Image (cartoon, rainbow, N blue to C red; front, top):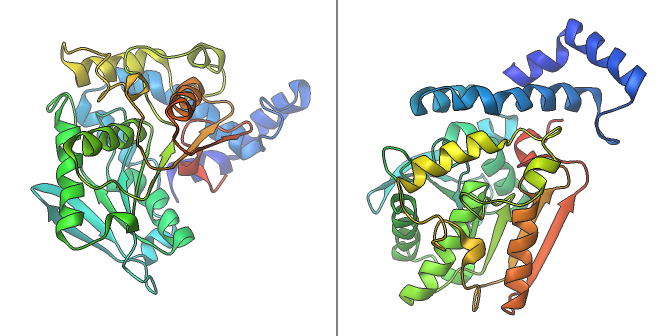
Length: 305
């Protein structure tokens, strides 16, 4: 049983939240009691993270979720992808000729296969595709441009393995969503073949800036400005926050493959997703933006609720 399950099944917490809901109604119209308890815990998580060292932030994040049944059943293999650690997830019965190239989120300072295995293997199961999940270098030990360098190296690895670019989908969430967009910019500018499409979940697309939803959705989401600012400072290490490879909302979207963008209707970074969609459409890119009512940042991580 993981931490979220223990919280949502705690009888004292359930009674307390049930009483509050009876008096005031649900915090968001569609939220279950379990979702409300989990969301409240996650709202406390961001400020706590900011007070911890990078190493301890990573340890805390990796202890939140236990592997799902799908994750336990999906074979995985750790590899070296052109000098970058990565993990192959290869579901039984997959044709193995189509690949999701996944870049995890975590503000560029945390995140791993332990934090994202449920999401990644869930995508594998839904799509029938394999996934290569990259363990790119993290700040503050490795500030920009380490992550984009690793992402390009990992993509080159896929091409060197004989995987056709039209059979690759690049995907990422939060910082990984921003990194996926930056990777597309860089691949195009390097003259490398682009993947078939991209899936961008709750992208962090403007480092050091941000839209009105950071404040507007503060009562509901676990992404808070102080922790974003800490992550941005560690990532940039004094470099320009307007660089399009760290703030892709400022980049040139011309010539990119089709984009699927998903975001939560109650999340702090909703404005980033909306602005990315707008910029891409203006550049002639085929874009689909799905905003999921009442959902928080990268709600895909918590689909059991």
